Image (tube, rainbow, N blue to C red; front, top):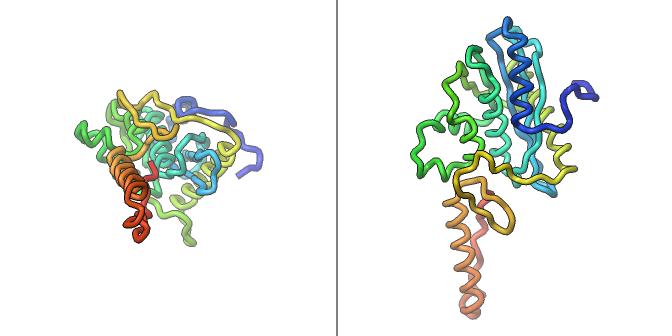
Length: 239
């Protein structure tokens, strides 16, 4: 990959989807196509941003388009993975057959289940804002395929995944220099905020964790003798 990228440096998911769709439509004679997506998140990130990388090739694995963006994920890489995949779903023209390669099985499962969730499960689902963006779209000719990442033996799928990974890292580093907020335009009619942080994961998991945390704080404040022999649970909700 070139050290001087030829993709925009300041992008949104919508602009990326529009740019990708245009590039694919111009090259519609090379269909079917392959698309590779990846997310990149650093646990040491100071602002909670992640990077998204998307790489598009024709059936002969020749590059058609590359790009990505950064987003607020609060260090939850699943959010970056689902954002990358739904951006592709919104970009692929309905008449183009696409094989979408993803190295996250959880993302593939979420995309398969997205259209069939009850309202209760939908509002609890992690990455629901991004899934909502693509949920109302008509069916596209897209096959989801899993690809193993960071393997020694590389075929076209693994090489494509490496390219998407490199792009995601690029946009993650770009995002670490910029403060951004969670995009709520596709969120449900309500959202949950905790200390200024939008909960993008399962709100029930978050609420159960907060309940346990509040009970613990109440106990150590009002029952100091008994509580000194106990330790709090170490699990936490990453929202």
